[in-house]
Figure 1 (tube, rainbow, N blue to C red):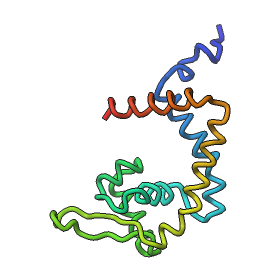
Figure 2 (cartoon, one colour):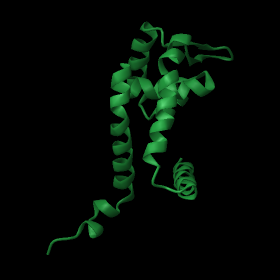
Figure 3 (cartoon, rainbow, N blue to C red):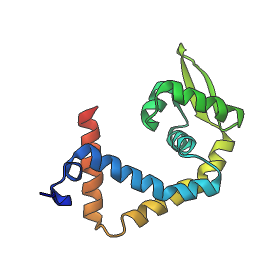
Figure 4 (cartoon, rainbow, N blue to C red):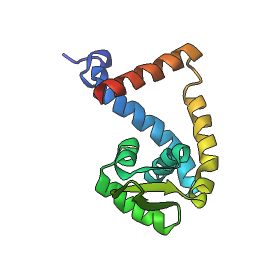
Length: 146
């Protein structure tokens, strides 16, 4: 007996649904990033830093969904490109802060606008209320899981 898509394990498994939705949205925005000459990892790092200016490597790793060693390698390259700068936190010499540079801001300023336009396109078939519910449910899930 063949299962219909509605009854399949993956089509009803939360982790898979979240991963698939994230993948589809990210893949849809990838051509915009490629045209701008930036990969998803560097985009997420610069976008995360754009609002706050600077954060610790640990906080940044969590925000951009990367392990610290992977993030550190990417930051090495980005620092060489003058997109970010690292320095010791003034109140904790063991803690490293990462900040976005003016060049980094320039690189992503247009992408921030395009990413919001992309989001509008993704959600165009949703009502304002549905969009708010979707984001609220996702934020709540994240808060409860953390």
